[in-house]
Image: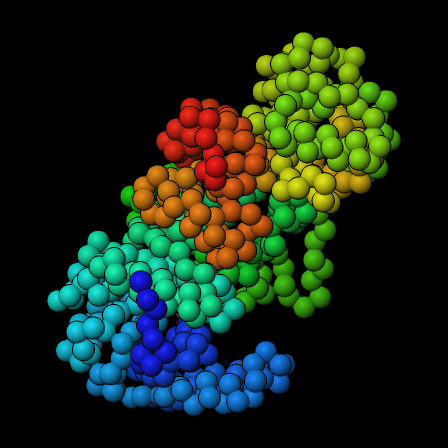
Length: 505
Ligand SMILES: NC(=O)c1ccc[n+]([C@@H]2O[C@H](COP(=O)([O-])OP(=O)(O)OC[C@H]3O[C@@H](n4cnc5c(N)ncnc54)[C@H](O)[C@@H]3O)[C@@H](O)[C@H]2O)c1
């Protein structure tokens, strides 16, 4: 399917943060762009702002002065819907309200030509529901940009129940021509990104609620071991708790209160207190003047142990063993079911499989059991979280071992799954369900999470690397511990394990 030609007039309705960004993208791609807002002068001000943006890009050498001037000239502020009669695409970025969006597109149906297509930038409203108000709902699809639109590569192309496939394909090709990375999605709550990302916040909130560690420590583990650009608490503080809590609630309600998406009482309290994050000076962290950013908790230095056993055969265990070996740290490596794991080994160290260390020690009969969290890349990790079995008298050998390999060690309370493993297993589980339910394909889910929220790896590719049977075990163990449907294993993960397949073969 061909992209809309550069001669096609693009109309953008709503000249706020998103509308202005989308207009900038379309004008830079060579289209005449008409911008409309119902606030007087908002469109003209947005056009002036975008032109200034083009001039700045030219100053920085990112576009030529001629191209910047030409792109600026292609922007036309307009004041009435009637001025959009010649548009080939109307992108809507107005207030997030179903009735307002339906009214706008219903009015536009009387104004634009039969070939004109409609792309709504809604983040959370059903594209099917917006389309239901139209005479020809087949011409409407979601065209979901991320903020800031000129910088973020991802665009979700969302098909409602009535959306014509050629409309979705035209938008897909057009977004590609605009130098974006589009992914197809079905109109379901949260589409891809706002759905699959929920566990990154939700599981961290649970860890905090259960006293696993403080926010700064969980954040540091997610960054320094998980490779996430921001920890969950600093990210929620940046997004704003009013916004993040509203999205969580809307996805939870839209999925008929599925416990997967259950909102957190801790976050509700923050919203009630007006501690909305960075913008209000206070959230999980304190941003007021003079506030000292908290440091993550790290264990004090311990000597490297004489004997210690790293147990297990998973790819994560092998990668941790490689890090220890590369740093010249001495340890023995035992298979998980190896009967030789015994007190003589000093401490038995495992990568978490979703059981608590205490439960694992009980199962193996080895009191001195310590668990280590997952790392994106053990060779590069700067910090690892550990959990110590209640039966273990002295975890110092495990701490000393990891420190000898150059790692900072954060001791968590003995919660199942720790921070990174729990987050990644649940992110992969959600992505797998989205694929299983036909919302997107595996490549689309991974691209969406890498480009829409900057994850260091797509959750399904990440799960492939960890081993899907290991992800299944983590989820099963979490489910057994909590007894909640929240941790039910996606049928697609189970299916892949039985078939010996991966998401990306
Ligand atoms: N801000 C984000 O991070 C983000 C990201 C992706 C999608 N979205 C979605 O994009 C849309 C716009 O969000 P935003 O953050 O740009 O909001 P915003 O408040 O910055 O801008 C909305 C603009 O639309 C105008 N407007 C409202 N109703 C109108 C109408 N009936 N006709 C014409 N103009 C109207 C307002 O005057 C305002 O200028 C929403 O649907 C939102 O959910 C937002």
